[in-house]
Image (tube, rainbow, N blue to C red; front, top):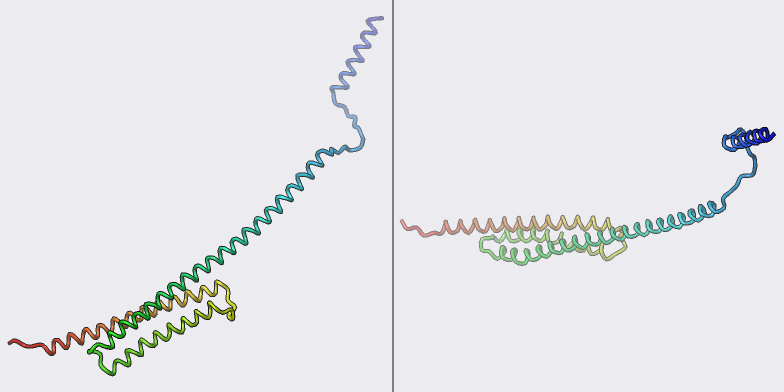
Length: 197
């Protein structure tokens, strides 16, 4: 009887072990379980992400403002450089007219009828230069024209180029009149030379 009991216990133990280790088709039903710890940490990470996003948006806005400030400063520097060049060109014009024109007009090789023509050609350049300076002064000192910095810079750059062209034109005219004086001087020397034949 002991052996039968042992065999029946061993069979039961074997069936129990098999039932435990071998998966069966039995399913359990019940309520789903939520892990509150995971939910809380996920909520915390979402809040942190929102804070980081808000900081990134503030940084982007700050960088946009700084870019706008850099553009404004860059335009101001361009305006200043154009204005310096314009001033330099006008100084050259006035200096040339003061010295070279006086020298040309005082030359004995310029005829009386040519004095007016020479004066008029230099006067036209100077009038244009003065008008340009007045216009630039209005642009820089008045908000009446309602211009942006970029438009103001473009106009100053155009005026700078025009002043460079006027300086070049004045130099060409001065050179041409000096060549005329030099030619007439040479002609006078040739015509009035003493002959030693």
